[in-house]
Image (tube, rainbow, N blue to C red; front, side, top):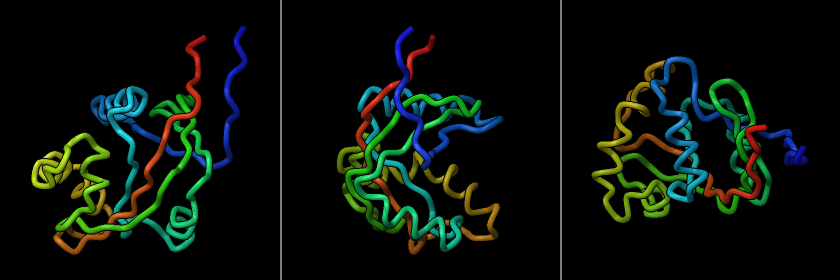
Amino acid sequence: MTQQPEFHEQIVQLGWDGDHGFGELLLARLLSGALDVLYEPVAVLDEDELDELRTSGGQELTVIDADEDPRCNVRVTDVFETTWGDPDPRLVAGEGYGDDAAGWRRANEAMLGGALEETGEELDADTRLIVQRVQVTDVWNDD
């Protein structure tokens, strides 16, 4: 049996019940290198969560799936904030959109709008996002 990677205290979950495979798509993109950013609207986070993200540079995180099974570890290489209306090019490129910010917004509007809706906020040009650039360091085996 192969030894599995270390499970880190800090975790990120990609996927949830009823996500229609979205979490698995994100995981596949992350594991293939096509995705190197993780982000959240600032409005959905409390101050402790926001502080934790802002100071996460250099940390290792464990990424879990919708079933809470560990899938990989990532190292946070950069943390920055940006807005929905004028997204930082590192966010757009990190999601595989090159320099197509409008295409990135079209692809992510429903997901971000839905996340904000739960907090009573609306997605607009001034919506702040916190972004972690990440690099996969370890992958869990299926055995």
